[in-house]
Length: 126
Image (cartoon, rainbow, N blue to C red; front, side):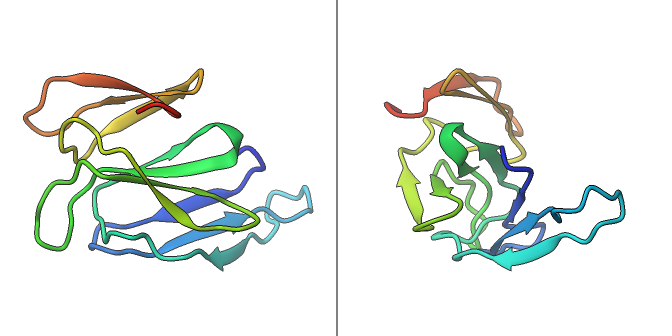
């Protein structure tokens, strides 16, 4: 995240947990980080992708649900005041083990086992 925090969601096991790790105010290499639990994702996921969006929002893209289905769904949270997950429009294809790049208020999504397409999503419109 822009403030140096790290957001962790989902997992190898299918989880709905989310947490944020915040660096210490100390500059020392061995300084202790603090861990804080966030609200649970609305959908349990594994093999999903986390994406830092503009303005400090964090999105979770795709993955696999507890029924083994590969997901096109996405959700995002503004970490900080008034934290809550919001559903984003789904991707056009289901995706698992995907990669992303967030550039100029767009998210470029690529990859999925057996899928050979890439997509660009506008953070606001798609």
